Image (cartoon, rainbow, N blue to C red; front, side, top):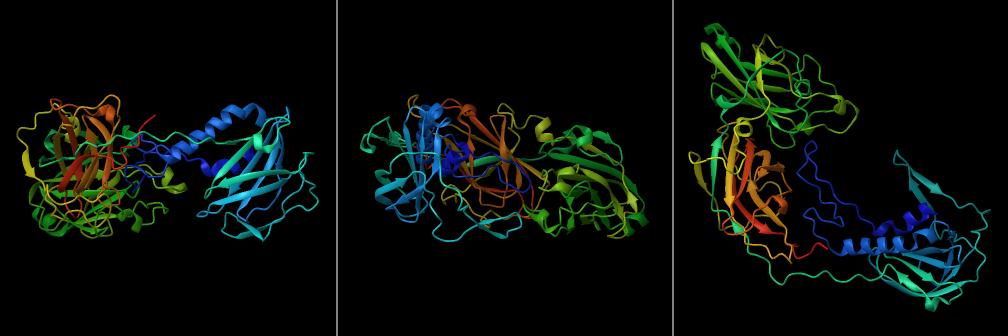
Length: 502
């Protein structure tokens, strides 16, 4: 019986979406859920609420009821349903419209004890994608109900499900249709104006201030207690002879998993050989389901012209993308297994000794905190006239790579909130670079330059409201082939912000 209830009513149930930072994913998924990411609710929520009210009221009667699907006369092919009877004699008439675009209404006659034969062949799909013919057991005599045919007047919207509850010894005309119609959501008449950001402050990550520690060979980041999504730093210092500078033209990385690194040698960005570009989804061009061999180098760079005789410093930003789905990737560790210089692109001839910093300096030095003094940061003006797209790819600004990890700090104020009206806010941004975002010191997710996501929810619990209360938004962005540039940004109420919390 419970399976039947779930089947007949599941069309009106929506699950709440989950914020994700999975491999190659944006900050959140939009599942068109009953409760939006911002906490706002709409028509789907009202449908789920009505269903919940019905189950709450009649749960004890339904779980002990008998009956099931039955034959229905006088309805189009898209309508099916059944009848159940509680122990006290209360009848529950279930009707469901499978049509996605057509309203159905009229009179229906349900025949308890008679099974509706399929009007056409029905198929299921197995785990291999094969069609499986579904058959009805003709020996089945129907459910255990011994009641007369029930005639009801119904009206079902597209994909609508309704239940008529008929009291004991009453005619269907005395029954009540569930779920009951919900009250409309009260909406504010006006929304606050968006806050356009005119300028931001910018600074490159300060590697000399990172918290460096020695790194033993073949040690992964999880071995060091680093298991979450972040940017970690690697650094090698090496003395080279003139002959080594001439011969060792390649920098090779053997990884624990197929993540991406960006590299500077003696303060200069070096040419990437493979993958050909290190932007948002490059990892999908490599088979993440094949184990990485100890002699496989899937981050390779041309360092000719950047090395020098004597002391050299190689700085690496490691982007922990998270696990891919599947048996092999879920077993893999993260981090750099082995890396060094080489005379060829296929063999590591000069392994280097490395040290690591668990976090970028911007994190350990407190750049993400609202009270940090950014007085010596550069001021960058933004475009305040053009419209900022809500979503899309191929629209991000393009610039030359001039660093590894770039930080931006943005300050803004919001109007005071009316205690009786709740309005969620978002950041809408057009920027290049991949990284993370902090609102008043709280990590709110990942910025991913490849669309479609251009809007990011700002939790109201971490926002400050009122003209005298400052908000600080910080972005730490790894430079991609498009650099790490913010073109335009605004803080705005959601377009559906008029949908209220209950």
